Image 1: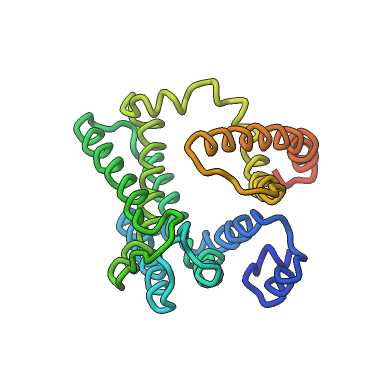
Image 2 (image 1 turned 135 degrees about the vertical axis):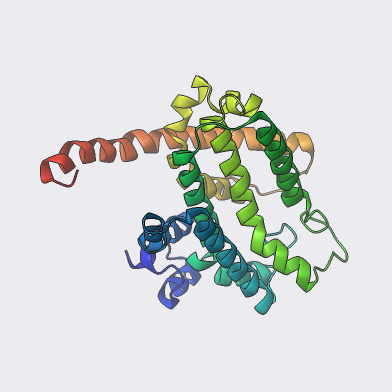
Length: 282
């Protein structure tokens, strides 16, 4: 529980240095738990004020700027990069990746999305079309905006100036959360405006795999490390080799995830449904 509440404490860092740590993905669960604890403080005013959208938008901007300010003040990389050094990665994780206030903006975007889902029943065709164009352009700019450094290479790399580091660090996660929220809104309340994306995501084919996604998320990173660390020879990098490796890892992760879900997550969920109502918690 101490690790869950205070992921960036000195004690936890010492345990990580001595390899005494929990599964790697639990850092994200810890950050999520901390934001869950303080969320009512920021969401309660939504019941008391009429300017709900202005209030939520202001919170998103403030916490986005907090992230960029930390990156600029600490001279950090704008986002996790493939060519980053170990020192750059460690410093970025310490001051941004593992801190809840540096990751609050995407969660507030999710709250804003929930508010829209409660009040928006339909979307006009023109608004939907313009929104899709903006979202696609934004998503592409996020992915390809760091192409000068986001690959393995030798020799000098692009150096980001302060303006680039501030704006990209501030708004990349927020903008990506907005893109995901737009897809959710269009699929749920868009009256068919979700297009092929909405049709694919709402297909019954995903019902069964969706039950195992959390278990797959928890164990996928350690499994990937185990597979890569077990390779004792040079790995030839090509599109085909990465495709085959990705497919193999996905299959193995889902096989293990199904086992974890059936023997770990499912019994807990069923026991909670059985006993919590009797204890008066539900």
